[in-house]
Length: 176
Image 1 (spheres, rainbow, N blue to C red):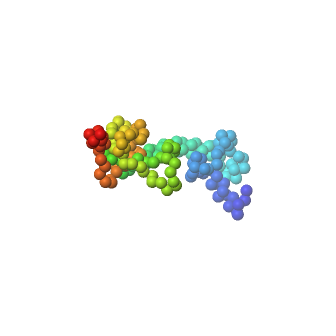
Image 2 (tube, rainbow, N blue to C red):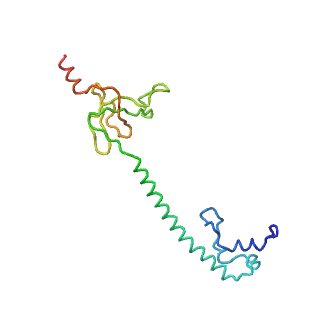
Image 3 (spheres, rainbow, N blue to C red):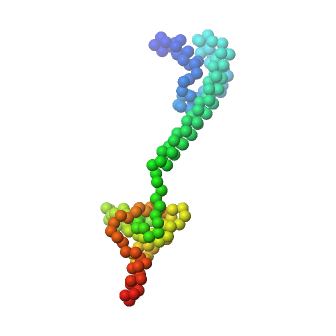
């Protein structure tokens, strides 16, 4: 196994513990090779087999420590990312009577509009707020477009004043 005249350095590199663990893409070592190294490598390096097995056992012991360190780093990273997300995000809460827009979701199949139709529809009035972020909505006629909807599909409406549904109904009853 001659590689540009560097036979000895190649053999020494093969006997040293690999700097990259096996789970990072290095070749897998069969258990038979751990117990019975190839005769060619043992003879070329002129190293007793006991030293080679000791090096292999040290490498295996070090792998457990590296796995534990990697797991700890992963947990620290996940906690840091969760803190960063929580710092930037703020929950959307709406009160009864507020005006909101509803995200137009074509997957529901009730809107078959043109290609460039607006993504939001409304405004709707929040009639009731449930626990967990669900809301009951009503339009200007008092009809409920959906039974209840999650708050993530709503956003606050900042347009013109919208007549209150309860006063609009009372005015309609009085006029008729």
